[in-house]
Length: 102
Image (cartoon, rainbow, N blue to C red; front, side, top):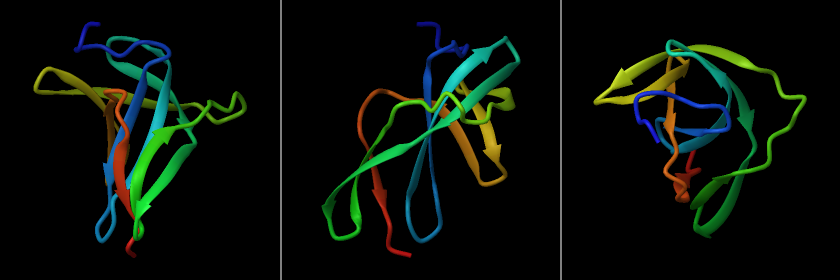
């Protein structure tokens, strides 16, 4: 897979938070060289400690709103800004660790 572009069906993830680590997933609905349209995916959590665990993406909801974002490149890899505090990049297929202390 070309690591400099996003493709339809690809899953992105974000890891963000201050006193806790939130994990969100998004699926690329369509993409051009400079723009991506993504839909949020549900996050499926498995708790494996006190307020900690792993997160994986759930199934896409076809009625979810499509979000349009500009594609940025960092170290040769694409990412998109979801919010001022959250950016998403290609997911490696592995569970991501979360915490919910706050």
